[in-house]
Image (cartoon, rainbow, N blue to C red; front, top):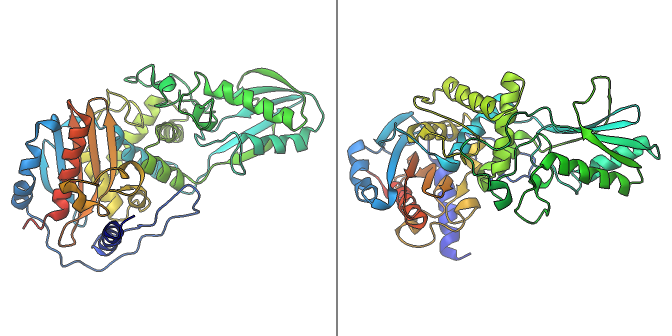
Length: 431
């Protein structure tokens, strides 16, 4: 990393930390961390609020580019909650992965940041049942939440007793691929079929991308192998609903929901997004489906004051081409993130030019000036690009923004345009 980039990163963090009256939490939040820094309230900023006229002038040229296709753009001041600029910002558009911001606030609101997701094994006579709890991060091996750990626990209980192994995925039901998804997504490694039980996110090779057609059945088969490795005699059973009379003999738990959200946002993890959306649906309706997850997200938006007019949701990841939400609504979520209402979200956003899905962007061209300053969630589909985030302007005023570009002809050109949109905000005093 060059001295120039290190300096930009430091200054960007410093401005985001000190800009006010927004509260910020700017620690990097990885899945191995036990927590993120709590937000620290800062003093009232003397930095002026950009005017609508100033923003209009600053953004006019970049928003005229054909590369943006049909777009919606919105800029707000998180300190006051006011809209500073919008161009088609209230029209519902396809959000791509910026929809994960709504999935994130819904999960944090409905599930609780400290909740952990359990994968359990119960026994009834000589029959074991592996019960999926919706943990999309369950691994095949390792010291944490893994099938290997579960198998060791079970082996200590059943020892040499022959057992039959069933599996239970009843927490989630209905279709496993959302409306608006391509059937090729699992094989292409885009997302696994959504089930309450999966291991290594449905990958047959943990280091690969392609997903199996039935993640739950595959997880059960891997668990049987892990049990045999621990000396347990296993006969493969069937997919069942575990009897209520069964006794729990083993359990592993995921990292907290807050850290799952961090991972989902930084790496734009589609499997994790769908798991969290389904679990939010379970919390509100008792069952996890694409429909109940979408309903939980829309309910959360309404309760949080996020505009829902024209909002149509079909998944939690933003992969569905049927999803529609306004740039203003995405921006309002970031207002909540920036003002401390959901203080774990801002630290999990990718940093321009440095981390996550922005690690290879803002490195060249006019947008380079914003490297280290912009924190944002990206979105990309075959003909759609989006960017939504937080950035301090040149005077130190923290702004939030969202730009959704649909029906584009070039992903590369559209990304340059949305990145330069964010860079214009960074350079803007715009009084």
